[in-house]
Length: 367
Image (spheres, rainbow, N blue to C red):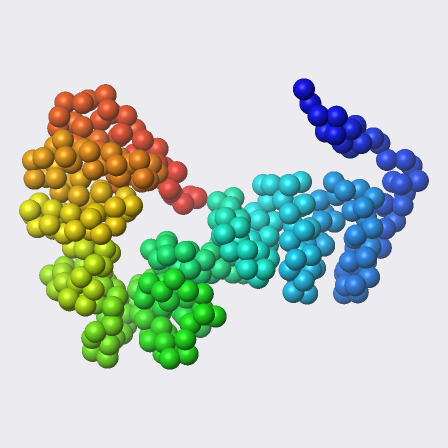
C-alpha cells in the first residue's frame, strides 16, 4: 500500500499553477536573472528564493542559487540548493562537482569524494577549470583515505595536462609520501620535502624523465632514510632500468620492511622476469601483512600458478576477484589459471569479463 503522505505529495505536485502564480513566477524569475547579470547578488538570491518557492521544480533557479552561494563561500546554503538541483537533474556533471566541492568545504569528506567521483564519471569538460578543481579535490580526499595510487594517478594526469600549480605539486608530494593527510594538516617542517617529492612526481606525469630522475636522485641523496623515497624512485626506474629499480625498491625494504607497495612492485617484476620462486617470496609477505589487499592476492595467486601450485593460485586469484571484482588484471590471470586446469567455461567467462572491464575503463575517444 502506498502511504497517504506520498499520495498527497504526488497530488500536490500534479496541480497546475494558477495563471496569477505563473505570471508572478515569470516576473520574479526575470528580475532574478537581471539582478544576477548586474551582480546585485543579495537581491538575486532573494528573488531566486522566491522563484523556487513558487516553482520548486525549477532547475535553473536551484542551479543559480547554489553557484551564487558557492561563489560567496556560503557552503551550507549552497549544499541545500545543489542537492535539490542534482535530484531534479542527476545527469549534469557540474551539479555533482559543485555539490562535492561544497561538501569538501563543509568537511563532509566522504560525501564530497562520492559526489566528485560521480561528476567525473558523468564527464566534465577536460579543459575546464571546474574539471581541474574537481580532480584536485578528489585526489586530496583519496590521499586522506589512504588510496594513494588513485590520488597519484589523478595528479599525474593533471601534470600531463600542464596543471602544475603549487597546490597540485603539494598534493602530489603528500600522496607520494603516502601521508593520509589534507594539505592543511601538513606540518611546516615537512613542507620542503613534500614539495620536492611533488615536483618529481609531477615531472614524471608530465613525461619529463630527465628532470624527474635528477630530482629523485637528489631526494635519495638528501633523505636516504626517509620511507617511500626509495620506493618512488624505484617505481620510476622500473620502466627505463629495472635492475636499478629493483635495487631502490630493496633499499626501501631496508627502511620499511613491511612496505606492501615495495613488496608488490618487486613481486610483479620477478613475475615479469619469469622468476616465480622470487616472486612468491615477496608476494606472500605482502599478503600476510595486508590480507585485505586484492593486489597482494593477485600477485600471490599468479606466483603460485607459475610455481605449479594451480589450486593454491586459483584460490588466491578468486579471493582477489572477490575483493575487487572490477579488476581486469585479476580476471585475465584467473582465466589463464582456469584454462590450465581444464575449466574452459570458467576461463571463457573470465576472459569475457576482462574484455568488458577493459572497455569500461577506456577514456572517451579511445578505440
